[in-house]
Image 1 (cartoon, helix red, strand yellow):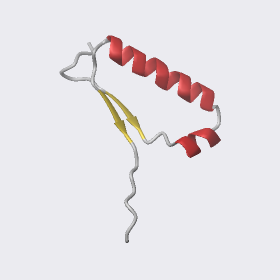
Image 2 (tube, helix red, strand yellow):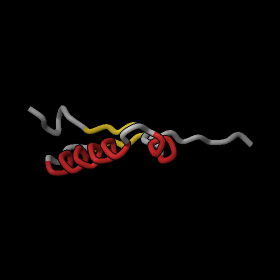
Image 3 (cartoon, rainbow, N blue to C red):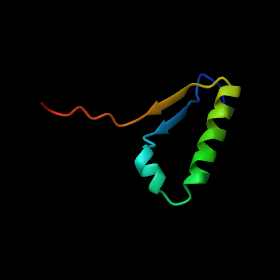
Image 4 (cartoon, one colour):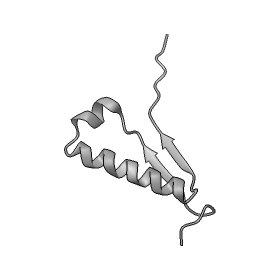
Length: 57
């Protein structure tokens, strides 16, 4: 059974430009929305990871 002690939703690196070029992106966005809403209803932790690049000076 899903619970806060052993479950979290982790969404990894859905970049705007790349996501816009993906095949069937509407389904991707819809599924992410559904998963996020479900996790919120179940009060599960949501972790969103994205790539952050620091340019060298």
